[in-house]
Image (cartoon, rainbow, N blue to C red; front, side, top):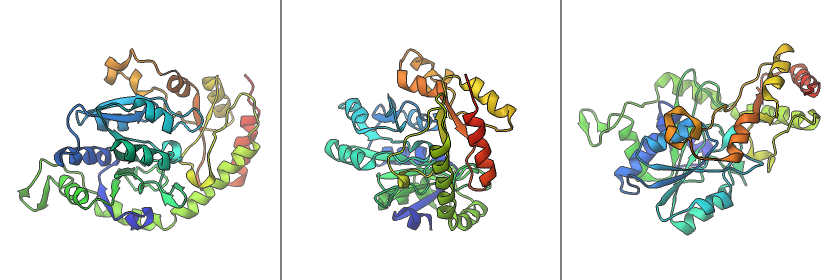
Length: 325
C-alpha cells in the first residue's frame, strides 16, 4: 500500500529510518555499486542519522551547505561538491519540503551517480505529482511516532523500483536470509513488525487529509505571522511541502522560546548542533560551514499538528507577533 502511495514498485518495511538508509548503502556495497571510501554528498545541516548511515558503512560524507531559503541541497551546491570519488547524492527533504529532485536527478544522470533520498520527514511531498521516495534509486522513510505518518513505536521503510535491490533488502533485514536458517549475507534484524504495519496501513488512509490540514495551518502562519524579529520559511510550491515542521528563525532564539513558553506555547529546536560540531565527529570540528552554523543557532519549530484548533493557531500567531527583542 505504501509503495502504491509513493508510486514505486516496492516498499520494504524495516525497524526504523536509520536502518532504511543503512541497509540501502550496505546492499549497494554487496552489489558492487560502491566501495569503502566513496563519497556521498549530503547537506551539512541534516539530522545526525543521515550522517551515521554514511560513516557506518565506511563511506565519506561530503558535507555541503544547503540552499539559504529551503535548507535543502541545491543544484549548484551539489555540482560544486562532485569529485572523481563521488558515488552518491543523498538529498534530505528537511522539515517536510522535498528537495529539487528534477535538477538533482539530472546531475546524477550526467555524472553517473546513485541517488538515495532521505524522505524521513516528507511523506507525500511531491513535485509535478511525483512523490518523495519515487525519484531516486532508493529512499529511506521513518515512521517514528512523531512523523506525519507515524507508527506506535519505531518503524521505517525503503522504497525502490530496483528488483535486485528489493530482493537483497528483504534478506538483509532478516539476518541475510530469504529461507529460514539459510543465510546469503551478513544481515541484521530490522523487520517491521505486524502491529506497526497494521497501524500504518490504517493511518495511511488519512495521511492526505491530515497533510491538507497541515498546509492550512502553515498558510495561516505564513499569512498572519508578522514580526520583524521572526523569519518565516520560504517554500517553492504548496505541494512540495507537507509541513512535518514549521521552522522559523530568530536571532534571539532563547529569549523567543522563553516568551512563547511563558505564554503556554512549547517549541523545539531542529536541530541545535550541526553534525560537524558533534563530539562523535570531533575530527570535523575544524570545518567551517557558516550558513549551516547560522541555521542551527537560529531555527525554532512552532507548534503544527493537524489536531490543532483554529483558536490554538490564532493564539500562536498572537504570541509570536507580540515578541520583542
